[in-house]
Length: 265
Image (cartoon, rainbow, N blue to C red; front, side):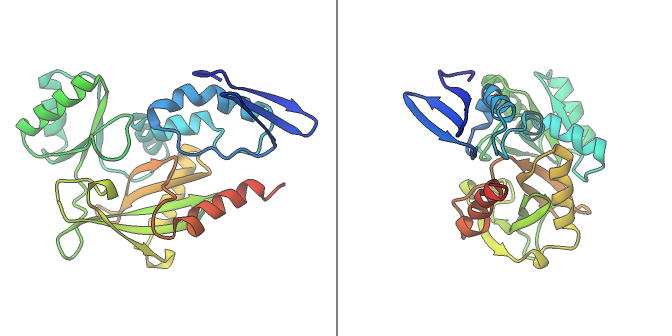
């Protein structure tokens, strides 16, 4: 496997996986928690899992790329008519190029790295000075980035909110509303968001269907979809590995995810 000394072999009793001096024999492999910046290096392992016939929902390299690399995500959404906010991808832009993109999107945007997680590198930008600060941040990090028009996703109390819908095999497993008291911070729990578990029927009309369509667009059998009802209903991003460690995450996400691997055993 690229990046390590592991190997996968086919045996009569299943697959033999070896890595770091450890070995296991199995026919089912659960792939979870691979950080975005490590996923390209993990692709050879995914290809081997698929070639050896492993039962693994995380073996789709192209689907992972489409979800992990947000410029690819936007390309898929545009191709398939998945509603999302107007977005412009930037790669080492000049000051003028960044300014033109900012103005084209209305001067109220969110910036995020093309590849990243957790919301720590996400900025709400409404001024040229904030745009310059974000541009310097991404230039220092050596990363490409995107800006997307603000969705005006505020609830009746004036607080930002969005929804996380976890999808498995075209069915909604879990729905959560995220409420962020800081209008300039992303709706991530690591950034102060408060999450409330919902029933699927409590989602705004059309969001469950939109979440399922977004996963199909990217080719993911399992994913967490971040979206908002405002602006006509839009998808922000699709996460390859939705978190298990949240309120009732074990029974609503982890157990069905494992059961899906064992269904054909």
